[in-house]
Length: 347
Ligand code: FAD
Ligand code: NAP
Image 1 (cartoon, rainbow, N blue to C red):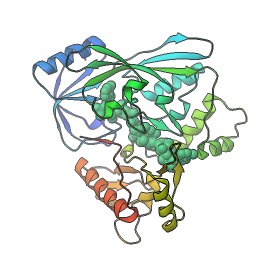
Image 2 (cartoon, rainbow, N blue to C red):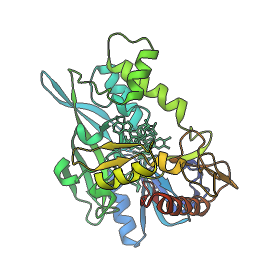
Image 3 (cartoon, helix red, strand yellow):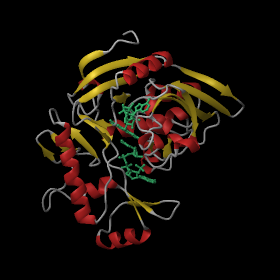
């Protein structure tokens, strides 16, 4: 595809992991900053609304996109700086995140091995400060470059600019659709400082018979746990965790513990408690004595192995999934008095 080719009425079925068969009024793919600049200028000239797309693994489409869907496919992976202990790796927004993880493992650069197998592209990773197994991208983030949609000027943003939080950043809030992220630079460690504090990783490493820790071994453990537990979007539509884990005060947590002895919560540095949303969803349901876990209405459902993941069994619509998410939010609120917030971007 040349950089200026716009396709009219393109199905997005293959461009979102929920498998929603919605259409883009216009669709184009950019592979360079120049192509991006031209595309944004043209979209501005005709006043077309814009939707920035990566791997489509964190989005629920509930309708067609009446505007331009811009697939960011900017490539490239390079070491841009290096000293005795650290290495700075810059990757284009269009690089698949797991490809970047594999590149770092191969070269012995530590820091993102716990984030192995997260779907999607590098450009979207800062958007929600991707995280798994006790590591977030913010732990290794150096900077990113982004193009302003309005005037097509380039900017460099550092961690403080991005206001990273738990599955949050400024790009998910006030900067949504204002900037297109074009590259991300990570500061990685040549001397690994492994984080295997998540019980599941330590257990898996033991099962694998690993005696000497390595970046490869930690990533392999994560890959094994993930493939055993999470639905593969190629087989069953989903966008990973649909909800965030809610935070409550220590007092609220203790009050909940009195009623529900085995409720799962983790004490944060702030003293507040992060509740496992999956546990809350599993322990309430559509009717007395019935759990949401494994629930299905039509083709919209709640995954049988992890209640936090909503799934499209085949032909559910975005609205079916959204309505199910509403019922779950209501049910958790009524049962535990806790408000769940969606993690997935809803369009
Ligand atoms: P998309 O879904 O294409 O886009 C997501 C949002 O970012 C949209 O609002 C889009 O407009 C915006 N966006 C995309 N690219 C850019 C860009 N270049 N510039 C500006 N805005 C942009 N997430 C985790 O954090 N941890 C996990 O462990 C995890 N596990 C998952 C497991 C499964 C099976 C699935 C399906 C998803 C999982 N996710 C997880 C969610 C998802 O993979 C990540 O959020 C990922 O970073 C999304 O990348 P993407 O390229 O697919 O983004
Ligand atoms: P899990 O290991 O069954 O744990 C359930 C929840 O408890 C997780 O959400 C996790 O919170 C929290 N938790 C577990 N051990 C913890 C510890 N030692 N300290 C603090 N919190 C702890 O979860 P899972 O569903 O199999 O997922 C494993 C990891 O992959 C998690 O980090 C999860 O966030 C990540 N993941 C994310 C997505 C997504 O789409 N966002 C999808 C799949 C997996 P946290 O979520 O805060 O880590």
